[in-house]
Length: 575
Image (tube, rainbow, N blue to C red):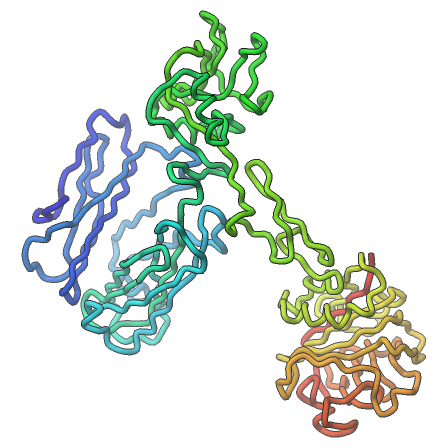
């Protein structure tokens, strides 16, 4: 549309659909110098023969607008895998909108935890606090520039969506909220995103989420499910099609499943097209070019029939339910080439930074590097492997890295990992429960959380219930989050009385206990009393510059001398 004077224009769909189609419409509109200028677009009166694309200006009419372009798409059904899902949200609007919905009609539609590579290469959000008035040079909008996190050879596509909370302290009455958001000045380095209130010059804080899509295949090729595809513009015979695909380091399309079958045939807009399937070597024994026998076929009824020495397969298109037929190899059809995408290049995978990516046809594998353990998507140092399951540590990489460095000199085997034997908040707080689950298990790491403070200890000795002290210079205490905010600290077996053989005390009436005068003591049923305490410096080294018995040494780990833990975990070393 070049001239939007009438609010709606009719588009014909005659003879295209047998039933009511789905219609999606978008508009491209840019106009400077208007404080609250914006246009909304929607589809109206959709039938199998036509629909209306409607635009409305959201400020008072001030003349005919030029250069507003509308793009639309109509379909009877979406064939996977072009779109993985679709749907509609119905608004009956029989009642007035609610104030808590910002005087709008609202329904929940879609959300995601993460966008999977390589379909989306990056995503994020931009916050607009909107505490000041918008600037005239920004056309009375709030605008921010977003720098892409990676380099692109061509300008990618970006999808955006505004997110506004009705619970935030409002700058204006909800009835006046009319938020529009758009992208401008997009290039290979980034883009400018803007939000505008369409009725006033001030409004509530807004965040804008964005997702970046780019061509990850060579120019002229398209990505789908681990492969890149190229479709010819003109027809040729089957042998020439094979040759041209090989010249591009690809193969004449083979098909692994029905989704791929539909995708390839959609690329030909319903026309017949060559496939790499043939029985030129042995009559009746169809194989893929360069790929061998098939695990999937879609032959039409009574096909293949080898009529007139037909040795090559072609796809029949959407009107024939995406089925196949055998024809003479000298026939002329368009074709699609297919080649693997190497996800291990250009950060198109989710392998962990301590993993090696290995490309496979249509996919990739991740394997943790030497010294690390995991599935390749998550890798932990062998010296802290298993501790990533700690609820207290919450998979914090800084905590895990620190513990790994401390545990590296004392682990018994390169193949060791840590397995939890006791979590007090789940298994129970009785000291007898701790001993029944952890006694005799060998080396352990104890992790304690008291409010925001995280601390614990390591011993290479097995816990017992005998109420006897054991000694080992390898035992140490540690603090990850402490009262003075020093950061991680390791407290070794070098206290004032560290020469005594009192590294740990295993006793049935108490939990994990470190030190002769109890540098760290965990009471039975510790969550319901304040009998647990810490007094650093007797067996284990006190905080630097402080000594045993001082209030600083006593409150360093838990924020106070006596404490009530929120949770305790004990992990034992195993192989």
